[in-house]
Structures are given as C-alpha cells and as structure tokens.
Length: 80
Image 1 (cartoon, rainbow, N blue to C red):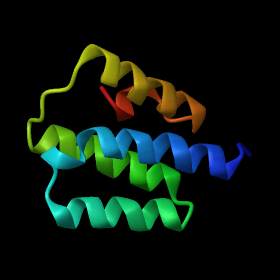
Image 2 (tube, one colour):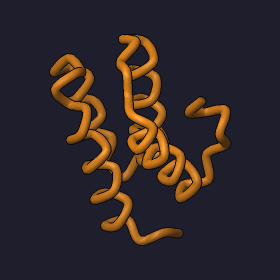
Image 3 (tube, rainbow, N blue to C red):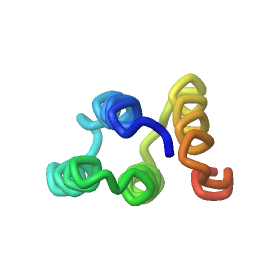
Image 4 (tube, helix red, strand yellow):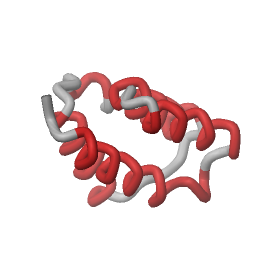
C-alpha cells in the first residue's frame, strides 16, 4: 500500500485548492475521510462535489485529480 502520509498530503493539497468553493459541511466530511485513511471515499466525495456544484477547475487541477486517482487505483471514469 502507498505511504498513507504521502496520500494525506496529496489529497489535503487538492482539497485546499478548492475548499473556498465548497460548502463547509462537504469540506468537513472530506477531512474526516482523510483523517480516517479513507482516501478513496474522500477522493470520490471531492470529485462528486466539484461536479454537483458545477465548479470550474483548471486543466492543471484536473491533471492533479487524475494523478491522485491513479495513485489510489481509481479508474478515470471516477473523475471524468
């Protein structure tokens, strides 16, 4: 398994880049998932909320999302 500290840092950095665009409850839920090493659930929740709130992201941020998805073995359909 990947180093969980590395995954925590990577996922937290993703969240920090968009947290000003998400409701506090969604941020709280994602942080709780990260704290409990539920990286897949945190990642999928983040992606879902970006989609649900129709939040525009940059190509650079999309690449970061894709990279993290590959790190935790989530298929591209999970973040497209």
